[in-house]
Length: 181
Image 1 (tube, rainbow, N blue to C red):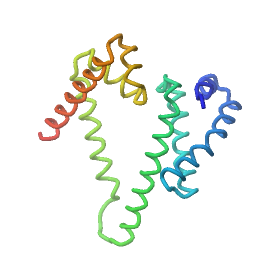
Image 2: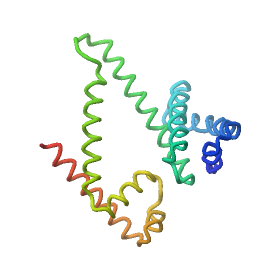
Image 3: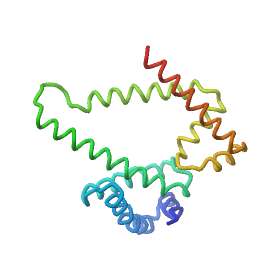
Image 4: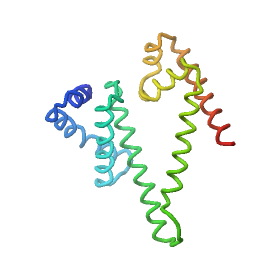
């Protein structure tokens, strides 16, 4: 299914069309989670709902500019949300068994995630401008094919792969060195 009309409807504030398209896509995505991830119906519905909340907001804020990659992004987001739910359920069952004093278990995770995000942003800012532009484009278009990225930057396919590898290696080395400090 082509989701460009969904992006257009949300951007133009056409609530009726957006609701219709979301209603058409929802059972497909729920079924995908049930079949591929062995999710129960309620968990699948929750994961799809969370995905749409994020995707709609991202479209409204102009963060999703490649409608052709939207389906892949939605599928990955649904799977990610479902896996997070499973992890949360594991944590909840462990909390029932362990009654130690202290803050919420998410508190430490949130602090670590915030630190990692800060380090990631610092490392992105340390990249050369052309690598920074490439990396940010790649982050915003994770589902884009290497050929699309090569075309966008006017480089060869091999150069796109090489540049991606080099940028990721620089980010990895930067983050590793900053985390060791």
